[in-house]
Amino acid sequence: MTELEKGPKGRRRGRGARERILSASQQLFREQGINGTGMDQLCAVAEVSKRTAYQHFGGKDELVAEYLRRFDPSVLSYVLDRTDLTPRERLLAVFDIPPTTPLCPYINAAVELNDPQHPASQYARDYKKAVAARLADTAREAGAADPEQLGEQLALLLDGAAARTRVLNADTFPTATAIAAVLIDNAIPATASDDRRPEEVSN
Image (cartoon, rainbow, N blue to C red; front, side):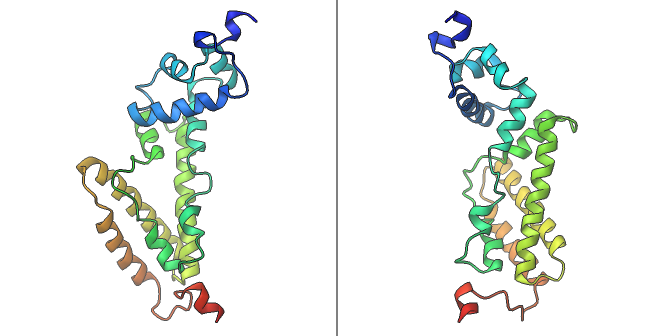
């Protein structure tokens, strides 16, 4: 085996190299930004050679897009697929986010890259649209008169709260939750039968 087939410190590349590269990108991109992270540093942290990195990813642009794809492929399923909550409660639970949570990586990437044609920017747009659509689906379950509008309103509120929390270094999610409750209650008729717990519907 030649030195080119080894990573830093002689570590052999293998099937784990791709995962190490992605793990390093998640750490470094979140901590110091996409533009602030060079491929040399990323390869050093991942313990792979640059040659190996470019064999797995055609370039940094492709790596950034894959980095975003790995974050939340299920689009809020950890909240919106819960069966112990009513649809209305699930919509509100989306805002139950610790203030120490890092700013959304999709927002970070779109701001840093500032290039609508970048593959990561396109993925960020697709993901944000998917979030609004997923919220709209849950709003429809809850009986909202205009679920698409409510989904878009809640998505906007969620991103705004995340950005404001980061800028002010203060928890703005309780305020966002209160606003979300008003939006939801205004959009859903008081008699909507879907605003009952699953066990109540089955009885």
